[in-house]
Length: 128
Image (cartoon, rainbow, N blue to C red; front, side):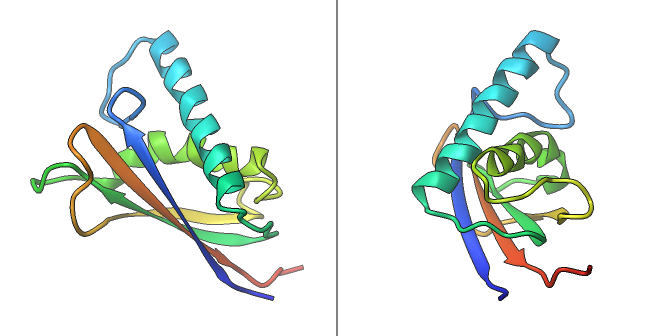
């Protein structure tokens, strides 16, 4: 059975990570732990059902309407997806179980000092 599930996670400025950031390793570690926990909590709260193989698209919503590079959100989406593994939604986040995530800019604006990540999880046929 294939299907689509959507998780919306609001990430505060204090937890956001960007590929362009130059942060102390301890701050990065703290933020990753917060994000991983947020991903797990969101999956449990939404009662996201387990999938064996999934294609994931991460739609990123910014608080401003200016220019943005959604691919820089990879440092945030990786721990969020790790949280999905912790919640049992994904078997693993390796290349055999997850295609992507593909990063896109979402329409609209997130609340001030926040980013909104909409993870669209599309179950794929198991190739083996």
